[in-house]
Length: 432
Image (cartoon, rainbow, N blue to C red; front, top):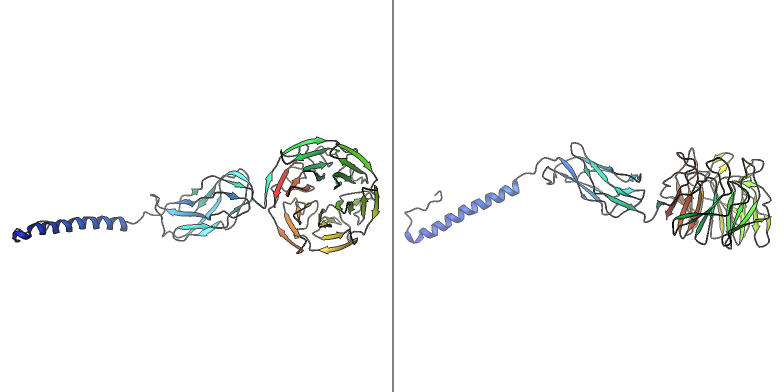
């Protein structure tokens, strides 16, 4: 009919026929238009795009929701038939973070889904970059990485960078005492860190410069024990510091002069354990100091002589972790019970190390940094109840001969030596 009404149709039906023809023609146009929209194929795959961006990222925790990357054509339409794999990496990375997890995924209907990506360092302005063969790359929106748990943050560095110093916390203040300076000699310097203001201040110095000493706190008084005055000249000197008066007082010397020793405090007494004596020999000696009487007594010796180990106390038991035995780093761990004056062997630290730091947070013992064929950033945590070890987020700045202590449930790793900078003065805080 070609849109024309048959003039031979009876007059009563001519208007009806015209309406039918018009409807058919219009319907054909609409259907043709719909078919054209539905059936028109997308263009070839040319590029990638982030369809789920990284937001609210916490260091060392999987990014949620899962990151998604989509294959598109030039018009931004999905290219679901594209077959291949897509890889993501860090683009902008001012904080020096490391991306972990499954960073390459097979595309499914043109989409790559990344559900276990983590970044280890706190920082701002991170981006991710997605790449795939034959496609233009995509860059995510900028995002920040915050500290939630199991992460480190940089804090104000030490005014005087030190290594082989000792530290202790009293009334919310962290004290860094003695050590070696970048000038190469021992120092009497004492500096105090206030985490509330993130500032350091100078305090009254020790009477005698020394390094590789040990420190313990009893009833708010800080005791600096032993160390080396210069070279390997071990000393047994003991000085007590009163933070209220900012003064030092000399106490009864430790019977066995030592450096590289550990101090554990239990039942109001300080236990000076192991180290290297004035003859340069590692020792098993354990001596206890009673501040109430200013006297020393001999206790059960270490099972194996060692030096430069980590020391921590949990539930009244003193733990000796790693260190050097005959010049070699070890992972051995031994526990001393002052109540029974006995030693027991515990599960060894997975990564043998010497020159590490150790401290206890909420009943768990953290072994931080140290040296094993070079400076290490390793952090491992020990559960005394289960006698087991686990790995935690590594130090951002690998260090040896650092000081480790705890304030308000946060662990601070202060000073030490690193591979790139022998005296960086670094201060980093770990939130378990």
